[in-house]
Image (cartoon, rainbow, N blue to C red; front, side, top):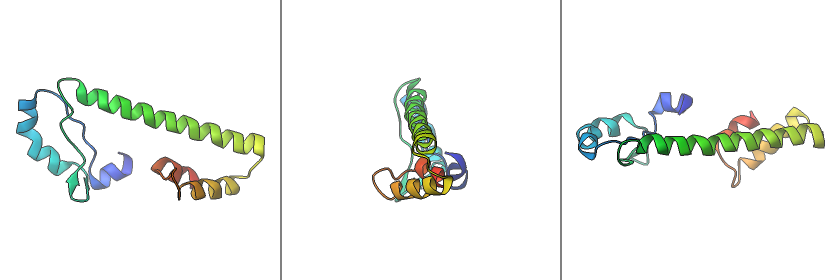
Length: 108
């Protein structure tokens, strides 16, 4: 999504009648982002399935953003870290198991 999706293609989560998906699958796989030669898409299931998958994805992402913002608040207002110190800490966290786009942009 975001600028990466605009530059490299989106991750697509299609749902609906399988017969309809089969007709548009060649187009969708060419439009979708590609990772290691594989398209970031696949049939999600009957009507509403693609929307459900996207809703779950967004819920996880919003939960991550809430957690990052609460950590930021604690580091700033309880621990007393400066913006530069927090940027360094988030950058370090992004090198480990917390490696993610959201941690990366928080570090900037």
